[in-house]
Image (cartoon, rainbow, N blue to C red; front, side, top):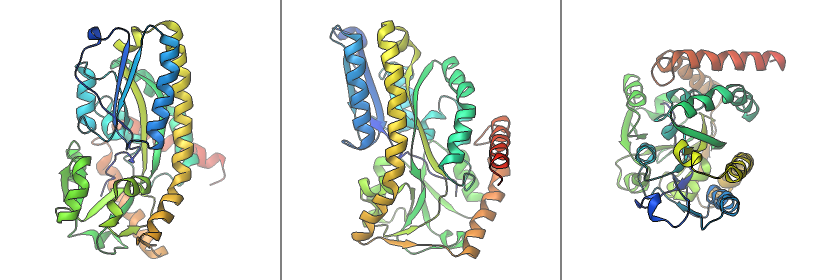
Length: 339
């Protein structure tokens, strides 16, 4: 089971917009799309960023955010940016991979990162080159966020990898490589979009959802999938991007303000999302969620599964060169920490 990312995903993050063209607006316009819930911490950060940009841009500038995936899944949001219906999006790796496949290295390697410190180190090492790749594809990265660790929410209790065989997993429809790997290992992925998760688990079309606790709480998944396996399968990583065309059309002062606000928003998203993981789990436990903690032997089985997955992921879900780079940075970090 490769992580089904969303983003809260969570990194799971905020909204969508109408099809009107920039020329129809009296001033500059930024329309931002994503999947994050309305009034979530991600939505609030986007709104604050928008106010900063509008003040700097002036001239009746408009900043519009539509929440809850109202414009489709993350692959669709990437397509809408390319054709000019959106000028930006807050996306998890699922959507970002539609622009630059190497970004999958930060989210598609299960059980690799032991903690946020390791992820932060690797991301910052890779960040300059990664952002340049996005720029060459026509997108400016304004800030990096994340949405917590993927856990497995299921209708029936499960502790070890084999317990999930025979269950039906939510999987992103835009990730055929992930689905092929899952099938080859005996698992059953059901490709869907985010808005289909809750009705699908309620009707039995799926019975396992890889999700962050924050997203499971916000979307009410836990009400039907009442068991959560407490392992940190993979982080949900995301970024706020805008099209280079929109960026180039801004006043220099607006570019500087947006760059600064984007960096600040990314820090706030990472800090708050990480803090809310335990809060979300506690809130769901009070409402009937059962937290299943694997034994050391069961946890070892999960690590063994991840080790078997890496050769399949390298060169498919993650370009081989980038895959190797992640492992080099991580080895250097652990060596420096005496690990």
